[in-house]
Length: 140
Image (cartoon, rainbow, N blue to C red; front, side, top):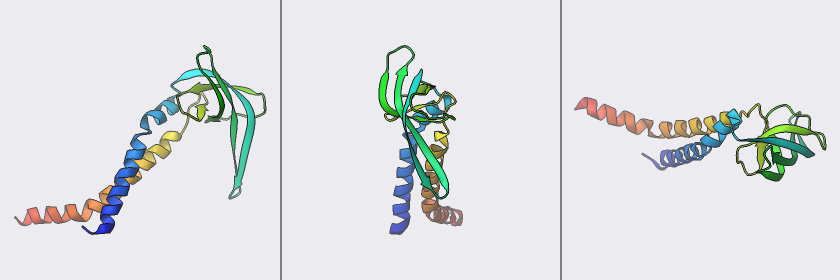
């Protein structure tokens, strides 16, 4: 096995490792499994790229039971009109910089893609070695 397949193998395993570390958070975001509360919008930041506008709504979160208060987080997922002072239901799953809309999030798609890409890279890099090993065993 040459140097390039080894590098691809290491990078692939690293990508799969990074993705695996996000599985729990992605599933919790998908299910909106966390502390329910209210998100109060404070500001909106929009970026225009490739003919598409993407906006992020920043604000403060407070759990319904008052146990958690978080300042300057952004609301992820759902369809929320971000106007200063507007209030929306939100769920805190423990992510450092964001809370989630109660409808959940599609973050799991990126996590799954990262894991699958990493495993695909790893499989590609070891496939020639595995084929050679199988041929050698078949010959006896």
